[in-house]
Amino acid sequence: MDARTQGTVSLFFQRNTALFLCLLFLPGCISVTMIRHRRGNEITPEKVAVIHSAESTLDDVLENLGAPIEYQRHTDGLILVYRTRAHNVAEYGIDVGRLVSWTDQGQTYSSLLNNLKFIYGNYATDEDRVVVIIGNDQLVKGIAYRGAINDLQKF
Image (cartoon, rainbow, N blue to C red):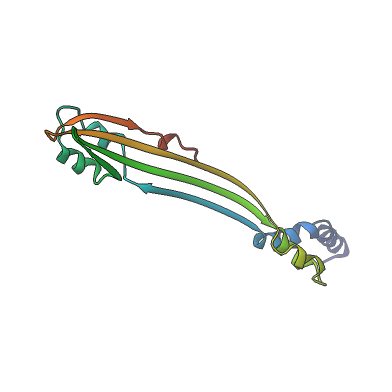
């Protein structure tokens, strides 16, 4: 390698030392968490569309939607409640204590900042609900559906 090339390479490393150190140390300091969680009955518009007032029976409802989350028995029949709750969580953070511990040789600041983390979070929750009213004759008297999970904010 000649002197001119050696000087150019040396200048490149001098100018980009901070960048190289950041690329080396930051992966341990940065965290990204993304969670999608669903709980409850699996409710889809297709399953609900099969159920019709005055035509579908209790057996049809149980076959399409499964066991309800909640039910109430009344003198006029049953009320079945189905729910699906969905949560989308996205968190981005930087662990300042870990970053400082690499640069603080005397451990003066790292013990103070050990648990300091900056986190930006985006949280979204929504719920689909179906309420089915079954008469004493085992026929569906009414159905109400609210589907909102498809509108839930994505990552």
